[in-house]
Figure (cartoon, one colour):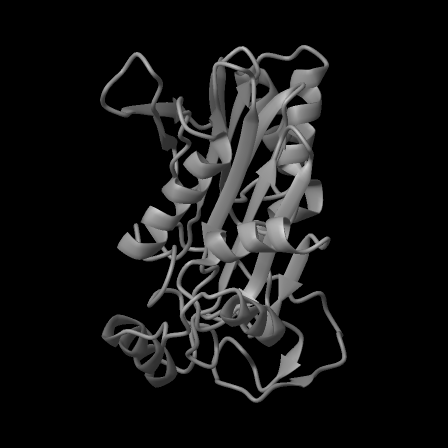
Length: 302
């Protein structure tokens, strides 16, 4: 989870380069290739980039075979009138735009996948199906819901993360972006919050920018990045805006795992996170023109 505030160069370039670097270095295994294999062992990527001046967005989801997901997202923004491309067709678009197709699988992701199969496909994200998903692998069939099957299924905080960035420059241009390979052992075709405008990130140069990380399936239902930017527009300081966005989710899902970073047009920034088992502090990075080195900041979850 890194929030970077950078100066110099175009803010879109800053966001694209920051996320792309993470994609190549695979950050903590949750961004880019060879991480988070889905139920069929494949790694697919989600990303978005947003221009806060024009409110243009480019995004990709369920992208196969292309490492540079944020680059493809930017191509969607710059070379089409669309906002979001998905799946196999997004990969074909990427190849036509000159991105190199390559296998995203690595020894590590093959390993994670085979261990998972050996362990009866645990954990997984199925419910109300037969055979019992807490004991066996699929294929699954729907089971009539007799009782609400609420499983204590908290996303393991290690299994899952995203890079989210907000960038602004001296002239008040704001951009934001995200990139992730999603949730390990996700159901194939699952798209989380990262490539969804207003959920994974949002930017408006007249108010600020925000980016989120965590349990995307839950968080995307609340559009936390959009909410945080709207609160900053209404005058809330970034920390307060971030906190309110998290509180809104907490009301319904008190134990969810997640955090958000916020920055307003005057360069103030903040973050907030939900206190959950094993997650009491959130770390993020800040760089600005004054500091040569990016600073590691942290915020206590509430």
